[in-house]
Image (cartoon, rainbow, N blue to C red; front, top):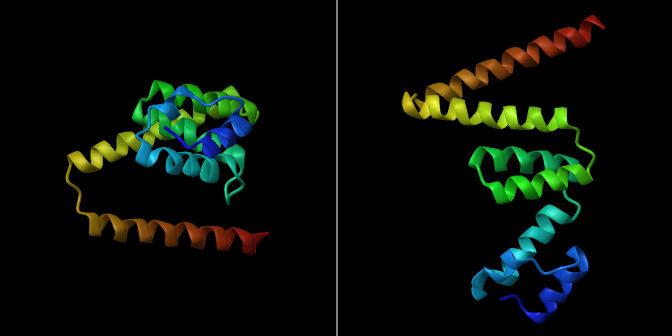
Length: 134
């Protein structure tokens, strides 16, 4: 259960103290709210819109109906379109798919890092060349 001060703060932010807050163990309740408040609700390096897209993609990837519902609603508040939601879900699925392939094939991680570095270098060269052409 959260402390009275934290419950008051949650009420101010959300208009209600959600039941999932009450499901947290006492030792983690206030701290868990602080993470939600500071990372999801407050200003950070990511915009609220970007956070909503990350949230829906991650929610879909872990297949959590609670998180999907919450982050879809969050995305609606940020005027994320259905097309953007579909793309976020597809990207999350793409990451999950290739993670499964890489882990299943037991790809060598050092080789993967080296190949990724090579890809990044190539793309940087292409972008620099395109900028020079302009």
